[in-house]
Length: 188
Image 1 (spheres, helix red, strand yellow):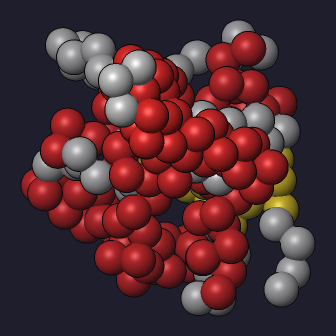
Image 2 (image 1 turned 180 degrees about the vertical axis):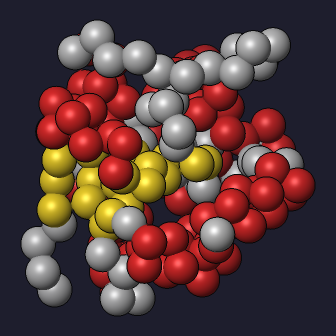
């Protein structure tokens, strides 16, 4: 497989007018602020979007964006498996905003938590629950040890199983009509 093409935030900003931007974060993360003109297709809906993304790639270069670059790199690999060329935004929207580039946030959107914050809450709660329950039932400490092991694995592999699970929660899912409209717009 060919290496993934990565654009820095500066490169992407300079070429934004010629790129078709796909944001693979959850709808909540997307609503908090996204690269102007980005289309939201959460990573776990990518397979359903392949025909639309293929059509869009015929009209212009795809730039895939997430918060840090990890999910967008995964998406680029999946797209490459289907013969669809796409670049990833190195450092994601974090790098984009750190350089002072504008993000778009629709007026009146709720302020959900970003995925990283959701993971920290869930992991911390599970560790704490395991420790508290472990005071009474020593076997409950396995819960804390499992979460700790998962966090270490997450850091080493730059993946996050807990984020994948949390992304499936209803408040992290796009409205079907929003996703359908996005896919229709990408087909052109």
